[in-house]
Image 1 (cartoon, rainbow, N blue to C red):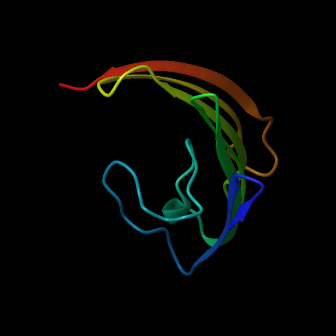
Image 2 (cartoon, rainbow, N blue to C red; image 1 turned 90 degrees about the horizontal axis):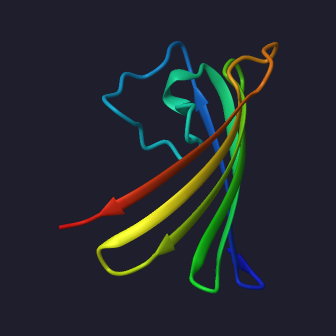
Length: 113
């Protein structure tokens, strides 16, 4: 769904009995930068919005998990050329419902051969 040039999505997932196995990352739509939905038991949901302004891609998402807490992510990306890109990622992650949230900023550059 797009609203005034902003792409938006909403996802819901329910895991029953136990977490699913994975290698690296999972492909659940409710997974976030630091929390994988496949490792949560119960309900999880995520809302995401993204757009591009003056060559900078911007994405913001919020996800809530039954046993894993919640996470807010803001990701900015800039493609300098076809082979070079830069990203800035801010995450606010609460790993359990009773934990204090952890804040992190990650900066990365990528060169593709």
